[in-house]
Image 1: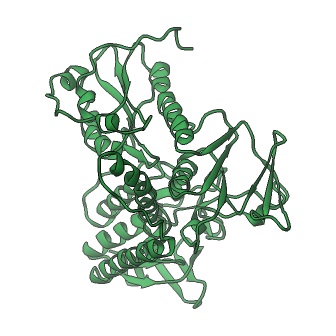
Image 2: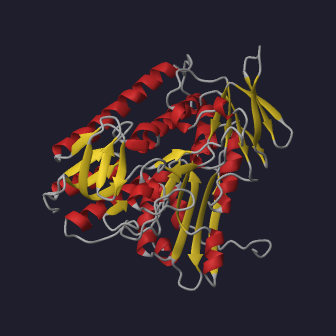
Image 3: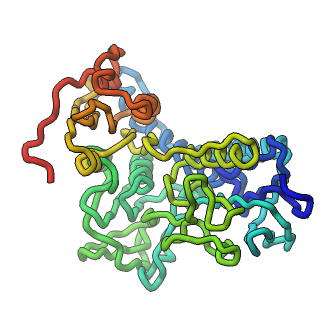
Length: 466
């Protein structure tokens, strides 16, 4: 551990999932550890991200389930959705989880400061509210990311918009919402609002949502949005937002294609940026990327030998479990005499649209650029559950296979419970399983997932891919 000249062996800036895990493990290994969080203990995932969002997904899906129940013979009386009651229950659970994070830190012996911390230099941390200054041997930056919005010069009227952060603080449902963006956050919230009965419009600069995902996933989700009742406007961006007097929906959004859309809530979901503004990285000598992310090596070490960074602030893979593993690896390596680093290949993930997306490994496009021979196996079908329903929802399952080695290098699913499926499939892909081994696995019938191990026919495109 550090010499006594330092107040702490480790100071963690940011008490999200990655920072909390690193602080706890380091403290359990005998380090003198402090952690600071300017908002609430738990960070983006627990307070204003994964957890409350998933509860909103559940809530929005119940309206559909009520309709399904009727078609399955249940006599269901619908009295409407009590949004304030739901939000109260959701925030109570978020409070409980935040309390658990705080309690776990305390039990591990970590000193917790619930105020903003900044770097004065590589070995000095300053708390902004109290003015306290600490000398530290090592620093871990785990401040995560924050929603990005254009400036007022770039988008006149941007002050009338909100981000995903504020969605969780709504006290009533809007009548009409317009969402800017086509990434996973925009698509998830479009499904949430539509499922809760809100007139929802999604505006995206591209031609198909979910850029960066496999093309078949993108088209399936795009169609799913429209089937859910979301109005999708593509190849357009916001040009101006202005107030309209005497209208039920008081804001008018002018688009680059000449369209005008009215709304009473406008959500900007056009990307996130690393939360490094004003952090003092320049004073400490920590190099940042052009977008403000902390540049790190495989061991999460920055350009300054005693300063490390994990999670979204590094803009490697913006997923909570990744931040946790990076934080754990850092603490084990530096304080636990167990050197290892997290491998960022074949990380499974889910998008909680309705139906969900589950994905791991290469997209078809990535595989064709990288491999000499690629075999594709895919299917699209109506799941058994909907056969008794007036429901057009279809499942899409796709395997991307190295045609020379038979290794499954990518799996992409759009389906109810796709997130649950991809977690298990991620193990097989990470282990390098082959298509023959998938085929040798006996199916569980009747399930949607059985299609993953029963795909026999290679898909042949009508034209050769570019």
